[in-house]
Length: 165
Image 1: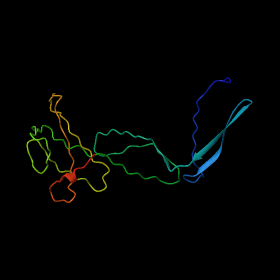
Image 2: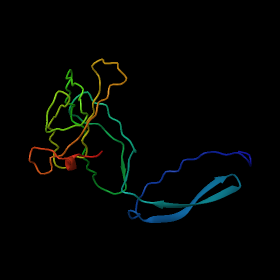
Image 3: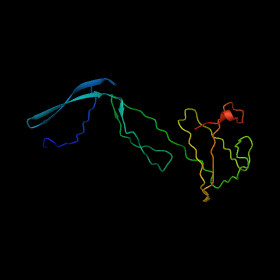
Image 4: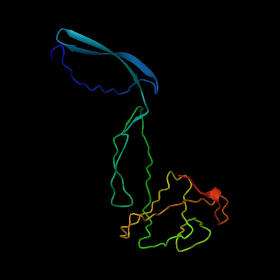
């Protein structure tokens, strides 16, 4: 390389005796013929190195896959995975226009559909969506999704039990 060229390098390090979350300082020395370059470095041992995002496509409700992970300690790493449950679709259900436009889950009407959903303790996510998938191409179709939590388990919903998301 001439004096004005650039070259990208990748440096990898693996902790051996460094304590977790402790910094170690030193220098990376590059040599080329009579030229020597010292680059100061600081490294910190971390407990785990894993991809930021892992995408797994599944065609069944259970199974396993390998995820590349490096750990900064000696011993076994155990992990627990979870995902979304299979969707509970309500294909073909229809609603009519609400003349008032005020949702009231305590007053069933042809314009409101109410579904009970049990969320297990410790659940990380509740996902829901509505779509106008029955072929209605009217761009003015307006569907709204409301989520209520029956906080006092009395079977009715009050405005303070509306969950804002």
